[in-house]
Length: 78
Image (cartoon, rainbow, N blue to C red; front, side, top):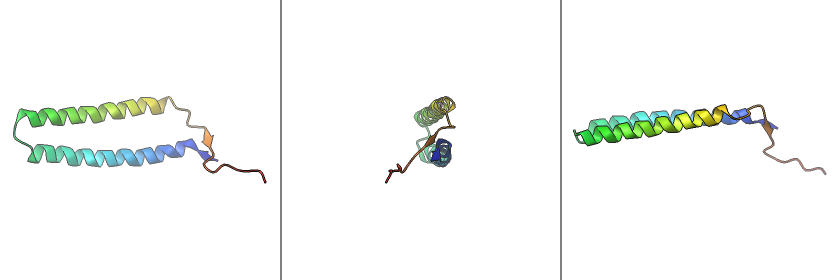
């Protein structure tokens, strides 16, 4: 039996990867994009979308029962 809370470690690793790519994307959008209001609006829309997805994930994670255990490999009685 594996506690389902170990999935939070995988999720945390994924969120760190999202954070790294977000910094990378925002830097490149602002550095190499056109010097116009359109670039700033697209960057803000991207950041708002990422923040909304993180908030939605946090709400869903808060509502889960993390004390449950799951069996990855089923046991067969022989």
